[in-house]
Image (tube, rainbow, N blue to C red):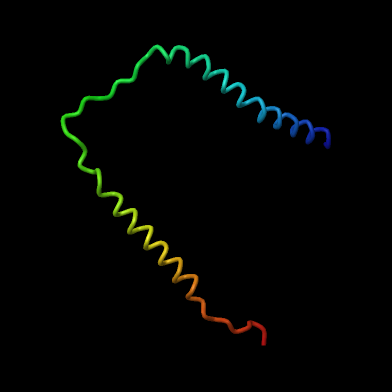
Length: 84
């Protein structure tokens, strides 16, 4: 039973060590063929109307989260001991 656990641990460790090596070798062989192709952007008729306004929303949500955290942290005024 103990030998089985140790062998499974060794097998798991070996697979964790060898996985990045195998992945690097696989991407290296693909990068040679990918270097020959070029990416081209899609043609659009209009620009997006979403740009510019999202920064204000993120700032308001962040400020609300900070204020809520301060209120929660400072709201516990029950300093009485729990034991009689």
